[in-house]
Length: 250
Ligand code: PEP
Image (cartoon, rainbow, N blue to C red):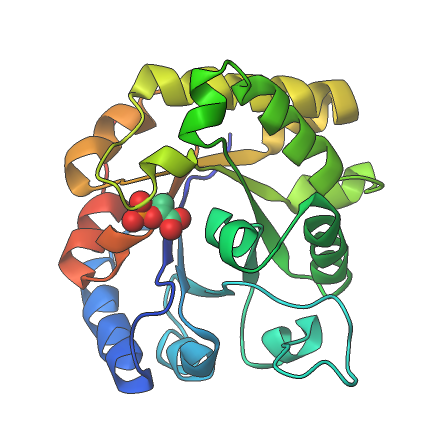
């Protein structure tokens, strides 16, 4: 059995006080939920306060990124140790916005994943194709490369804790969700790639869908056998809306 994960990626939204207010609202809304792992990824500056507010609740906190070095002359960077120190359990790696605006590539993603694992963080590896890549029939090639290179040189035991998020770039922030069938096809493919690389561990890996997930479409997505949760952007910014996704039915 794979425990579903519903993760909210706030991107560059919310101040410290807004983050704390959200966690207080959310914890009341989801206090009865025990069968879903709930994750919130605030901006770096709000992580500590959000993690404090989430103490003794079933809400975990994630970073949205990290750098692979532990310390040194890397102006503006945040290390894995720093992220752990402020209370993170998860870290998102390779989000398409990092790939698009901050020159992230499969090699840097792989370094970040290794650094995260070394510090006991659970990496959420994001993969996904652009609309041009989908329309030119490259989806599976792109996804296979992102998964294989992103997870390169990891041991089976390291793979065990990793979460993968399939986020078609054309569905992020556009209101265009992949249909359950479109998402399931790629999730099934990703599990096949994992099985080829790591055998039965593939059956334990949580694969989340991301791309305009809302309370209105989560139920259908979660009926699919290889969809184990969601990475949510816009709809994670309001506690009621996010709680509606956490409380999906399938
Ligand atoms: C995301 O940023 O990972 C995302 C899926 O965003 P949205 O839900 O807004 O499409």
